Image 1 (tube, rainbow over the protein chains, first blue to last red):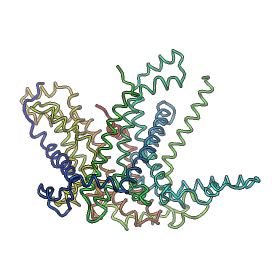
Image 2: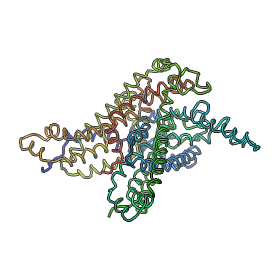
Image 3: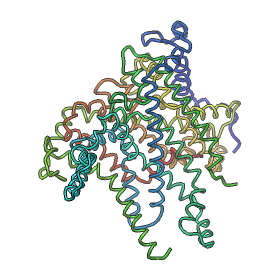
Image 4: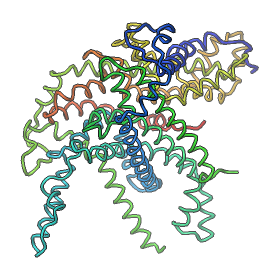
Length: 320
Length: 276
């Protein structure tokens, strides 16, 4: 069918309106605001932007803002721990579940349960899972600690302080600045591996079975097959999955909001949460500064994507 | 590796996988069990795995202390509205990009793909300002309308329409049907599987949305479930049994829907990672 040669107004119009009103327009506004001291009570027009113009002031403020620095390092901490954990565990799970044994579908479904649960529910659930007094994690740790303590008491050795600590209190998790971020990461990894696993499974199922047959004929055992067949052929999926996890990790928000509110002592305050605080958590809101944070975060994501894309050539195997 | 060693390795892998799977399940089971426990019994030792008597008052309390049913309804409106809007505008534009040609079409398509690179957090501040100037904050408009343009939906529907055989549409054209009629009567029905998958994905995204609804609503009655639970959980900070009752109500139905329509959900979920 030869295409209709005209502009299909009726078909394009809804998306076009949405594009200008809720995408292109806002992006432009956000960029302009980041260079202003615009106040929420100012009118939303060019004159107001000119009147409140501040040049690079917001970006300069960021350079000297200790909370922003903290939020930056926290974001990095979160991403650098949570993403590798998520990718590694989900890859292992996917490899294990990429075969037929009775009940494999049920086990796969189990891993997907947190994926279909909203991040808010996950956060609330884990606030209680990690509760130092009644949460199951510390109950289990205390039980282990007490068993260890009993072991030591049977001998002439004195009970190490760490064992005693485990038996009597254990980590304070979300209320302890040192344990708060690990607590968030635990919840994030728990909730995230199902989805990553799903993507890995899809990638694994795309690998042509004849490669394994050929490798097997050549005498390659399971290890060799994994390193020389599975991993190279799966590398595009690993790349994609890692990139998606990184982008998601830089924008972690819901878990933080629900589990710690950025605390204690800003120990879990990340860039997106700080942006939210500046724009919606203080009065009067600092929309200009918050917009500048948004663009800083965007710049990180952009650079990260470009770097990943470049590095890809080094380790991602591509079919010629 | 010998057969025997292989079987042992398989058994170990299976046990580890199962243990991991149970780690996923146990918090949910614990949540349900706690939601039936007597308020204040959580510190009792030994820990009860399952309460001797079911304490339904936790559910009663959560349903009366906060407008739970209303939050559910709001989430449903948000998720369904977003899905409807997204599918409608996405399929229309996707069809235009697949079957029409006009000057500047490629540039338009490219620009829409570029928006995929802009993360949502850049949009929330200006969107909030626009919505408040329009007087739409705390209405369903603010919650749903930003989904009017979705480059991902357009891209997906375009790919789908391109892959459809053209013969049926050509036949309709010869019969004198207008492009508009061909779209509704011929092309769209053929796109049903793609619409179902995209719809599931959008519905899930809408149901679980948090950041934007948190900003776009402020009265207790307009909150969707996610925001309602997050904002009002402070009310139950020490009442774990009540909070767990609320969480059970919030998570069990979506899980049941997931189990029932797993095939579509999984296709919808993986959709987010498709390359083309």
